Amino acid sequence: MAGPVHYEVYIRKTAPAPWALQMATEDRAHAIETAEDLLRDDRAAAVRVTKETLDPDTMEFNSVTVLTKGAPEVKRKRLVPEDEAGPRCGGPQDLYTPMARELMGRVLEDWLQRQGVTTFELLHRPDLAERLDASGVELQHAIQKVAVPESQAVGQPVHDLVRHYQKLSEQTIERLVTAGRKGRFPSLENHSLADLAHRLSGQAERGFIMAGIIVGALKGIRGNRARLDKLMDMADRAPMDGAPRAMVMVPIEQLLCEMLGTRTSLAEVLGPSLDQGASLAAVVRMVAPREVDLLVAQDTRMSLLIPVVDGPAARLGARLEAGEFPLLSAALARMVLRELMSPRRLRPADAAGEIDILRALAMTLTATAGRLLTLEEVQTAFNERSKALVTADFVAAYVKPCESVQCEAEALTRLCENVTGVANKRSAARWLSACITSLRFETEMREPQAQAALHKLALLANMQRAIRACGLSERDEEDIGNAFGVVGGSVETEGKAIAALLRSPAPVPQKLSALLRLAAGETAPLGPVAERAKAEALRLFRMPDARAALAAQPEALGPLKGLMKAAGLAA
Image (tube, rainbow, N blue to C red; front, side):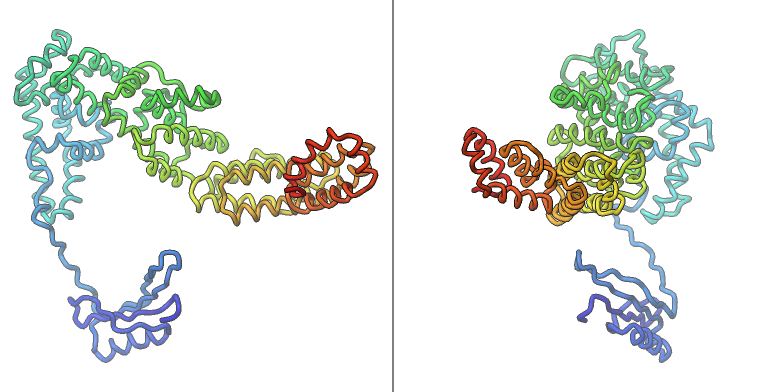
């Protein structure tokens, strides 16, 4: 088939048989007629016609079903590999793995939020286990939420999985409650944490017992800020080194990963007054305080965008900077990336402020690339976030405060500079191109009541130079630059700026300097204005009076040589 679109006819000779390609053609009517003839003559139990369209970018075909007739397709039972068959959690210990805790956190999210605890605490506090067991309905619903999708994945009946997880939950609760009744979780009010860690060294369930001791110390403390402060106190009292220190720090890190893994928890720890963008910036500062402090020292404006981290968050940041809690550092960094790639606005009420905080986040995350995240991951996240910055809703909110079309052009130029990704750069360039090629932009620039023509030409030149620093494609940059040049030509024609300059009583070197600046694109956009200024400068150079004036002032030729070179009049 020569064309990018063709039609394929598939048949099933019997109802259970798989689809087989019968023919392909570029004629839609011929494909449908052939399929119906095959079905009518009983040469097939079912027929299907699909439209195949070639994507020139990926060189792959996109398939759309045009016609399906005949016996319905028999659904085959999914074959489950032997290593995937059966429940995913076989014993109480399996519930303590990170994946199991994450799943439990999702199915018990509402109950955990009401209790103000995490999954890790639920698995190590007897009182919470008894409370969940007494609720009945909460635990039953959670088991059903796990069993139904797992039944489809492992090919086991739902009722069997429900009974299995009911028994497993009973065993886990019984184990935890029994440990509590036997006093295996001593209180830190009467014991030293370091002493308990040394005493537990070598015991079979030392990790389980130490985790129960740590979460038991949080009992009765409400609010994640106070809980974080308590955890930092326990980290300060941990043994200095060796296995006893790891026995204390590992459960603290696991608890911190769960506690700081939600937006509500971060808001409590960092401050409820921070919006989403400021919260993410504060997280980056907490995870990488040294890199952020260096950036703030180089650019004081960063201090206005990145909040100061204080209190328990600052204590945690100091430990993260020292290399402790590496899993927590990675989890927080990836949480920032997930939020950047989500559709949620960073500053819903301030589009310009969203670009500011996004730029600050880009600088800080790039500075930490290689230690917490790879540079490719950071670039991918900002490319995804940039897609939201070039949508019609965001652009409308972004330019809404602008009172003039000149302000809109400057704002859209800044948008072009700050988005990343080839496709996003192209979309931003389209918005800017539509603005500066509009009749409104040219009309506003040509208004005689506005600034003088030379002032407006200088503004256009500044915007044209700014475009060259935006990293747009060569074609977009050329098209937008030419558009600025065309508007500049209209402004100069309307205001007769060059003619007024030539008529002025200024000395010849001053006139030549002004013309060469126009020709070089310093005080006017490159294009018609620059060409006119270049022609007038050449004409003025050839005039005998001008040559005599320049000969009388040889010191004036030095600055003019650089301008002539910039304007293309000298090698």
